[in-house]
Image 1 (cartoon, rainbow, N blue to C red):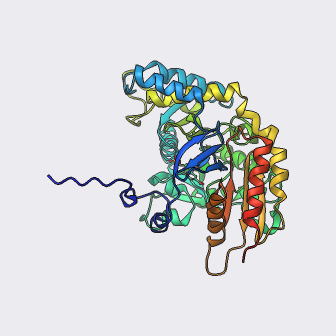
Image 2 (image 1 turned 90 degrees about the vertical axis):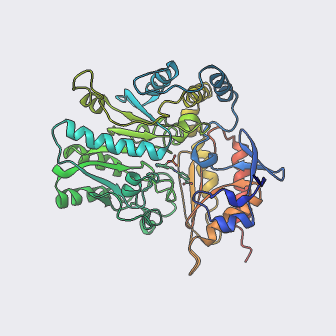
Image 3 (image 1 turned 120 degrees about the vertical axis):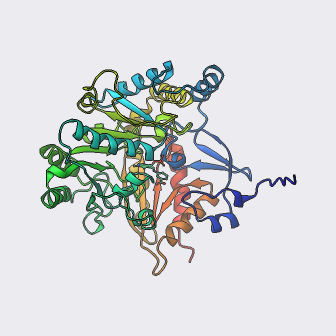
Length: 440
Ligand code: PXG
């Protein structure tokens, strides 16, 4: 047999959400990481302005997490959780519900944000059926929402590029209007003043479809992937009230906002709202081992526990739900968050962050700057005929200047690890200032 070994053949890996042809002509490769920094293959230390992909909330290669994984791998590498259990899964779930908002007493494990969303949507449908409301089958999402890439999440999601190639999607889905309105809210610090009334769009959909056909409404408290759309003041409370009025379950997709990003443990805490289901992933393990967790109230959970004891209550789950390594990583992560106060640290540092970020106002082509917790976004006026080009060029220039930011459309998003110091914030914005300076 003629086996050819190809080392470092970039073409073998079909990269996700990547312009593969462009990337492979000029790749950006990391080989290491440590706390606030990545290390590139050419030996540069790059300041991580995005917590990896919004997940490394405690910073990179933290000892408690590394040790927990190493120990777990040598003790119990795999055990399933279908009709069997292992101690770490129960310990992890108990630790998680302890930091969850009041009333969220149960957690269902998945392996990613996308799977958490599918799980939540299925729970919502099955819940209503269990309660004798089998006509409640419609799902409501929101324009510009991102709920992962599986069929349910893609269908309730509202980003055209993520949807248009993939057929007719899941039926029975409708969308609220998005809340982004630069004409009224540009350069707002924190929650925008205008737009609470956009929540009434749910009443429009209720009038169209009738509440008796609607199971759930899913939104991100802050819509991050689409470019950091911060909810207008009062919007989420109004949406929650409309959901409650019509017995529509409210699902908060907190894959990004959970685990301290806004300065509270969860986004539901920040906005003082009690949804019915909360989806999470990313920060649950500091991004170190893939894991997702869906938090539910007893109202939801108990509706499934009414059949004969011998019957499986929810025909859903993954081989790796509650994987021992992921649970160990999560426990190490929660220890780190708790010892260092990271679930609330963003609240302390946010005023400084806001001040430095908004100092970029007036830089060329910048049409908006917005922030909440330890999240910031800079929106550029699109170059005529070349949408996304301005932000992409600035993303590349930032990387070459030793700063990692995230680009989506003509928006640059920043969301550093929650351990960032004031001097590292200064450093981050010094680099950004240079990157945004006119060159052409
Ligand atoms: N819901 C939300 C709110 C998310 O932000 C997902 C679901 C899907 O999670 P998984 O683990 O299946 O990828 C996400 C993921 C970005 C970016 O730069 C955002 C995400 C993923 C990758 C990049 O905005 N969010």
